[in-house]
Length: 509
Image (cartoon, rainbow, N blue to C red; front, side):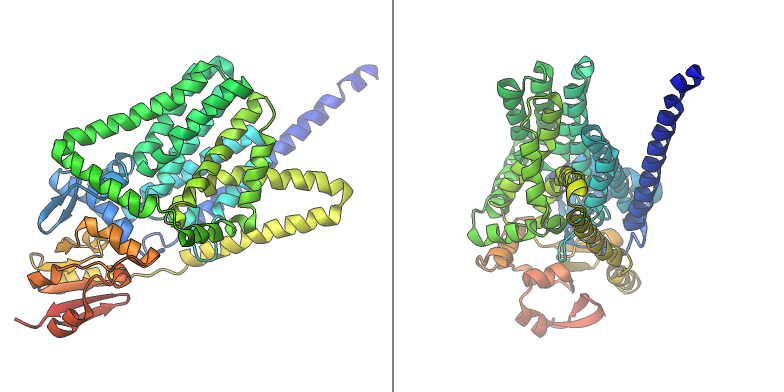
């Protein structure tokens, strides 16, 4: 009898562990099914393709068709814009998909869906390492519910060929390796190098990340040396050094490819864009940015980040590892409120913020449940609404396909000669057909957007002076009002509509 009593607790512990693993597997299956639904249903048509996506897709299409890493217009190759806005970590996989399966929007978007899956997996593993699997599951669910009433979230960005989701995927992989380096000193050297490589790929993927990631890594190194004393010199120095080296290698590659004159021109245009959108310091833009931030996660993003930073005050390796995503998100938000206030700029902070928000919610529920159960369950109900409402909006997007661009492309293929010049500022059509498009010069993009967002001077464009036989106007052309209405009314007539697109043909000799 005594032997039976002595070994009795072991089966109970084993059953408890098995039940815990079963619950985690069930949570992972549910998250996987939800993510698959939100990312794959009506992928080609929801959300409808648009300016930024089309612009990015010009580069892999041009690479596959002509062997040149560039944008393209009727006058020839263009080496500024999408060639530096989004890096080869996106362009080359999409080009490979085009090479294998032909040029198409579905092939390209599937590449980004794969990055979305990678980002969610890395987010889950990072949160699990820091806080355990329940918080990890909640953080992943929050990321899937990261949209607001009017602004897209992680699933929507993961359905389009943009640099945000791939960049965040590499960023999360870097943070995961950084946490491993801090928490497992025996593997610090290897994990630190892997972290630096992943951070470097994030910088290459989306060059705006260079504004935040290197300073954040430098600040982490300083805090570790002066306060935490939790990581060695490999952890402090290798991630920022390797990340900057990767970005430097890509910069050197662009210098080699573009040549000194082309690289200098690109650099000048990048500085112009930075002054017009990245660093604005406008009170109205800052207020717009704050209004967006206070809507994310039902208003829990900013409190969650503050809580995460406060929790990371302990001088332990665990606290340092948990500090990294919260600190990076906080720095991102500090920059975001001084920028143009475009919500996509805050996207990395929103995803990283899912971890401290989930940690705060779990801690509050655990502390309130024994003492004030009603308050605990009311808080849980509020969090459920803050998750379910954005998920419903995202599901509505996936279930509301629009094929307007595809219908316009089909009309062009049937009725417009391939060699006829089509004047447009809708680059997405250049992916759907092989027509001879002339696009508005890239250097007009920043002043056109600045005019709409900040009320700057209107943009003057003389593209219709060349008397193009066709003009195609869609969402971006209407948004920027780049083509004078009086010239269109006088010299052109509408040939075909697929709202919001319309094709006009010149009727005046």
